[in-house]
Length: 201
Image 1: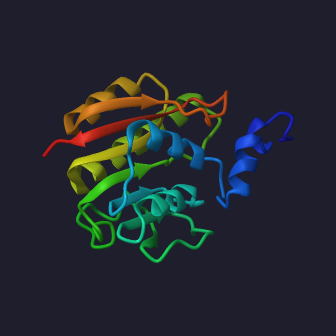
Image 2: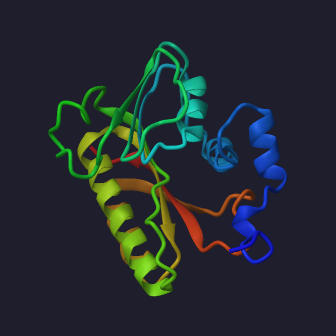
């Protein structure tokens, strides 16, 4: 598919700005906006980043929590960047490691659980939406298990008829909910970030 037909193949101002700032992907600006709007990350926090590759969210989060914090990044694919010493990368399926896994629980309980995970798209809109909702729900289950009381969760989901059910599930675990579509989201994208704040004990 040519870049003319596929807008995702064309670098835009966010892509160029990310490269200039040393981040591997434009997605960093989505997390930066979410962080700014809900005051998500602070020094000394413990953060779990699910679906971390190519690493922009992990780099950004590690910078915000500083050397007193701890970050665990997990992805099926190798991480093509080097993280700060207070951040650890584990290659594997974060959603099948088991909630009691020593790897996944390394720095638990987590102040913040992040999930920028998306399914490998098939071109079938309904299938992709369903798979996205499944990833969101499974990431939320990890956050519910390993997140700290009072903590936060950020999960990506494709907008669909399953979004209301995902929001209901989120509100079972978090007192405050925010729906954020960052400025850096491409105009043709159906992605949305559901944020849970003040995790219930």
